[in-house]
Image (cartoon, rainbow, N blue to C red; front, side, top):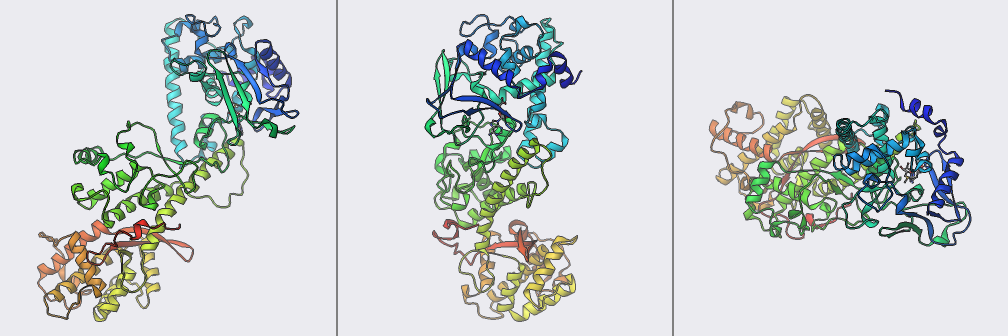
Length: 639
Ligand SMILES: C[S@@+](CC[C@H](N)C(=O)[O-])C[C@H]1O[C@@H](n2cnc3c(N)ncnc32)[C@H](O)[C@@H]1O
């Protein structure tokens, strides 16, 4: 297959010169002669970064910038000889009507108009000659390997290959149909097919307003489509059905001579702009982060049978319309604070960035993780423990996603081309949103931390705080436990910051230890609690001691196991002072602690002196006091 450049330079050397003003003059002449209107106050200019565009040459005397009659439009309809809405073109492609989808037929028509050498077949030549060349195409469909690297970690990286696959499938099917109809396909190729698809995605309008009452299809309006996009342009699209389309600038008297006159393609996010048009808007105000998520089918089925998709069972005051909405492949969007579309209704401020369907998905998973029956939960009084689990699952998913799309700091190297420039604008904008939402969720964890004292509300703690409580409440047991830690893990327990630093280092290495420390600690806590209850050691005055309160809470969530794991109970003696009970009791305590850790412990990355370290946390509350209706969940936590 000859290369594109070679192919088109052979046919028409003029076409090499994008920006050639004689081509524009020819286009405008042709347009006006055939019933189009272009304001006398504007001209068409060209620059390398945004191509042809419209510019005011003087103050605008009227809002009308351009008006294109239906008769000049390009669409598959031109191949349909049974209609009289638009002129017909004589083309063998007419035989493909009904055999090739309309949106694909228009690609073939464009390629034919672009490459056919017989002038008598060319209906829109002045227009086609001004369309950007393949070498100027900027959408990811035209990215090379290096350009694609700029999209690494973004949703568009995948969508680009999905779109290319779909296009290639459409091309293969179209080719098959043309061959079966004995159409000469020498001028057609996938490369030109891709060019035509890009022309349509970057400049076609939808037919709905000019040809109402018919299935929607893409339609090109020559000259009107020369205006570039600005998200702040105030314009009116004035369609006269079956007649013409006029593009008007509202507040036209604000446009100064020399200003670019913009269209507004409607609020579009950078993924849509980049994929369809090949450019992006820096700091695009409507930018969101697309996310697709489904429950595993079995869990979804079970949840449905438990009526969890009934609107009356949707928690947190969320909008319930998603339960009846058609499930499709469309993504949903994470919305950062201050988004112009507003955020999602939710009684819990930290969930307002997240679409209700996604929160609901994690809510169901949270109930599953906690072995709770949905019927026991009133949607308007969900226990904080369940809220916390939902938050944790949401955070973990967003945190994981944000690992694959890091914030890029101090980008200093220049872009090697405009494709990369726009790809990076999009990529960095996406990373900024994702990390802002991750930080918003993470801020809740920061408020739930305690560093000292007996907590008066549910908390999250690492083994550092648990050991500190142990030292305060049971000093001799703590001393024994710490000696065990030093001996077994080589950590320095002489003060809490040294311990934290050492355990974090182990966590990052090949033998992470904090889960095991939790296991041992909880085992000790239980032993202490049981001793106390049996009245053999000391008096227990209920909630004044955090450790006993925590054990009671954990026992309410995870009862003592009936089956125990075999273990070396003697090894426990290095940590649990005076472990004189039966071996079976020690094994039971250890098994219980293991189950609790397995179910409730979670990793959280925190920043210590500018470095990210991972610690293992537990959610704990004292006894049954879950923080009440005005608890942490209803506060707005600053990221
Ligand atoms: C409808 S056409 C506008 C006319 C186009 N400039 C041309 O040369 O024919 C849309 C294309 O214009 C360019 N474009 C539009 N708005 C832009 C903007 N704000 N910044 C950069 N390029 C823009 C993109 O290449 C886009 O695919």
